Image (cartoon, rainbow, N blue to C red; front, side, top):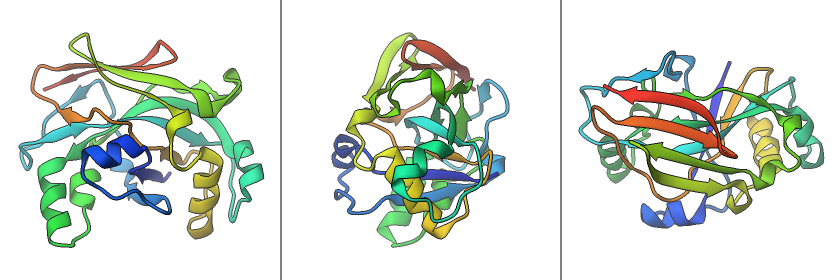
Length: 202
């Protein structure tokens, strides 16, 4: 199982971090050990600035290579909402030095994945509303219509370089409104007003 992530896929988020608008999908990966296994996220000791990034997550339902965009929707079996936890201080330091930033994105338990729902439950995956509550206050909201690179295109693009396999996950990017989490925070993720994850920061 592989975890692909698309960075800077919402224009407002790219601007809030001072990043240029990408001309192609920004792809990075997380290992399987990045998956959070329960509802408790423990702040790691190596960072003082862990940020939440709420995202729609796609699950791949069958194997594919060099997938044409017009057929890409057939490869999405399920969807959910998740969080790409980011050690922003480490990422900023790596970016300033021109270094890869996997240590800031791919560390253990950095990938939150909510309860999956069948893709067929939704009439249009490119018009999904999602949001994040922290301590019952809405902190992030987005709609997949606003992505720079649509799901079909990102699947096709990734599959040029990597064989997609059943069970692979794709984190599709975060909208604006990212910020730090703290011990004691209660995070709840919603897709079309259905709560799909509920976790505590410890």
